[in-house]
Image (cartoon, rainbow, N blue to C red; front, side, top):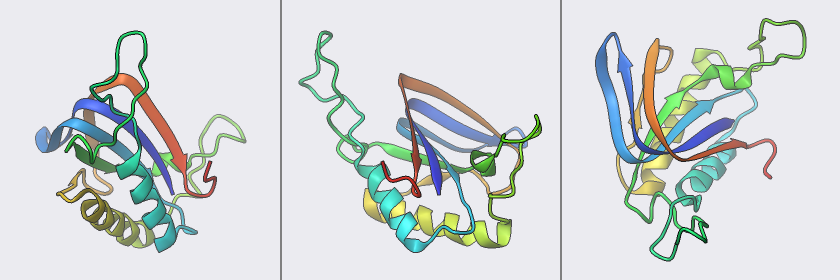
Length: 155
């Protein structure tokens, strides 16, 4: 499972020119799922996302900017968007291959389990896009801070 996590001041998803979800102050999380992903990957990733210390606390100053608190600590929100292209392979040629990305019948249940786990870990509703839809995602990246996590490379 791969995730691109962005600290945002605001983010939203539009589908067919209608707002599907929007958040203020929190995390926009793009999620890519592959067939080898398990419940263990979901649990590990959810815990990592909710507890990532990438928000500023009151001790930060202009000369010392070390984010020290999590989205949970700031009572922030999470917008999770499925994105199979996170498993693109560009090894051969110029057209990416998405063969590692799970098909919908495998990916949707895992994505839904991740949303449930994130909600449990965060203690509040998780905003989402719509799996497989043509989504327009808008965001104001704060920092900018963008983190890539791959559950197969737990660095």
